Length: 109
Image (cartoon, rainbow, N blue to C red; front, side, top):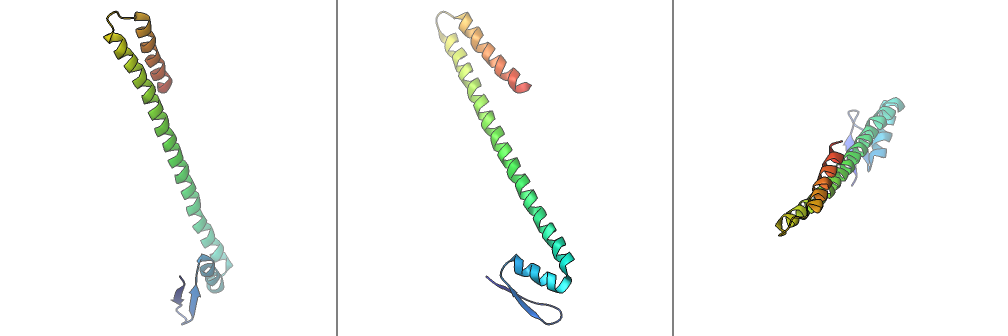
């Protein structure tokens, strides 16, 4: 959709996109103002890329958290099953507890 603006000198200009607006700025205010505005507008692109990187990093951390919690859940279920047995297999119980210790140690470092 095109936009129509009227300048203070009474002239009317039509523009469809930002390039047309920048051309008008170049015509009325000069090339330096146009360059300044283009630089200012491109800063938003850097911020958008930074936000996108942060969102990717956050998703990676969420995925890692889910994986670690699944590992811990598996080991805790192993321990619960070993405790329910009539005769406790102390080696298997110790191994599962050790695995939980290794997982938490790895995550805390």
